[in-house]
Image (tube, rainbow, N blue to C red; front, side, top):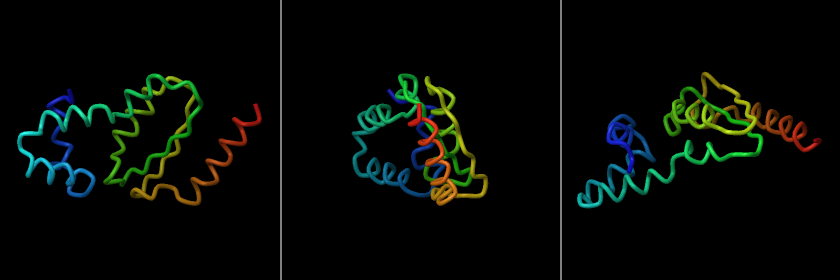
Length: 114
């Protein structure tokens, strides 16, 4: 079950989709709260990160309203394999765009050459 203390993130703290989509759904389907949050608990990237074995390149945009930095750092900090992260302090969900494309190509070249 998704922790009750985390539920505020879905719609109360975030004014935009996808969080508002959950709020709109539960506004109509009041009897589906437990089912909805149980389903959302399976989407937690931290759960998957703990089982990772491949190298990964993460990116985090500190102004991102869709994927809050705390969620990216949670997955990054729990990632079981080799990892790197690029931080874009002034970007929203678009992240590093072309700058990050270059980082991805560098990362792939480094890891595919092995």
